[in-house]
Length: 190
Image 1 (cartoon, one colour):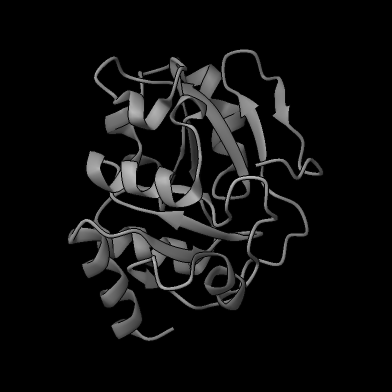
Image 2 (cartoon, rainbow, N blue to C red):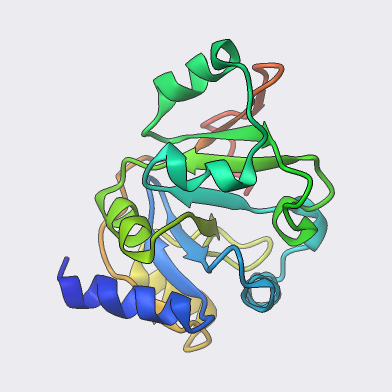
């Protein structure tokens, strides 16, 4: 992946754009989590309800800490053991985190990715990104740049082309406080 492609994607994000990029198993749609207008646009493009909430994806844990309640180190151990990697955790959100990010929940879905393009994208952007599967509501998630184009046409500001991480199923979602599995890796409902 060229530096120019990453720079172009980051510039689109900084300009308030919505981009698509490969993740561990599918293409994701992303935007700046601090830009409410970008989040609204992403939800409208995807035809997703605000109440569901969104995932934040990051290159390292420090990019997520501005959004999260500080939790006892013991509770963090399973999270830290699973990252970087394809496990998303529902973590108690700080009270000032926008409902546009967390939906109707008091938690925020967060993941530290091992996907090299996601890591480069978040590092170059300088923080976490909104991440939700690149698909229209009730449609299968896109697994290639062409499938993203097929579903969204030219409505996105940038598509960062690359290979997904090769996982056949979407990432698992777990609850930090209870340890329960909310979505198993084999459940394809995003």
